[in-house]
Length: 371
Image (cartoon, rainbow, N blue to C red):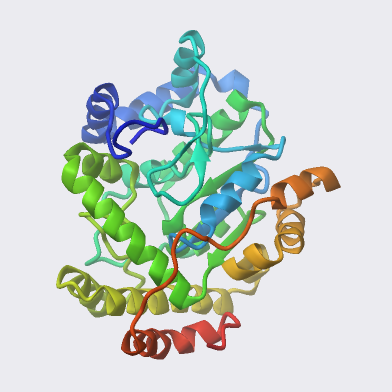
């Protein structure tokens, strides 16, 4: 799906569908092309190093997009943008081509999520997952553990990934790289080994409100993809399996539980499926941080409720943790407009409320939720 508004928010332009499909079907070709590009621009990037990269991660609908947008507004920070798809693997050549194409005036339009977030082709977006899928083809197989810890090794990916970030920083003349990746919740140890000076923002949301939002998006995307088969293919190609007709659970080490969650979703037990998933995913995060003090120090856990209720104070913590200097006026502007969603309210029965609380309370308590 493009960032442009149309009569149907799930429509995918033909050129994007065709070109995106070509990239998706030939991962080895695009690895070779990306490495060729790196050799050709070596002089341009030889003095650039990946300095304190910023990673935003969390189960979808926990505030990760807002956090990425606030980071991307900083003049030192570079990110992937909507316009970077589909030739993500060769950012220098793609951006050179884009610079030759006349750009019309864009008006920001609400994205397909219908959540009040307006975007243009220049808005930051979570496209890094395409690189992970190129080198880790089973990254989204729910029957296999997605965990990549400190002991994980993939030299070819690590070289390509580092070169890619350096090219992106050179193209946009930025010093710090920021990425949103919900699936990076299962890769915190690996990323921290690759970049010991990285800073992580881990978003979480109170289970009842979180599950209500997840269910709303699932219904929206399933309907949108049913009417637009191209949208389903697009979501697969960019690595978004959080919602829709090909929703997949992240397996964080318990094969049986991941299978059970998939079965619950498939059979229509949405509330129970999401409750078990929320509890399992954030249990994994809590266990990971408890077991690794240096990683824990690199992470700032952000509660969605704090971001909405105390935006100034919370964003002050965010920028401090990320080691980004922000003047007071920019901070005030970044905090403006952050509030709880007003376009829907959770509507669970008493039985469903009890189920959510019972299934999530142990994990929720580890993050300061006492409901």
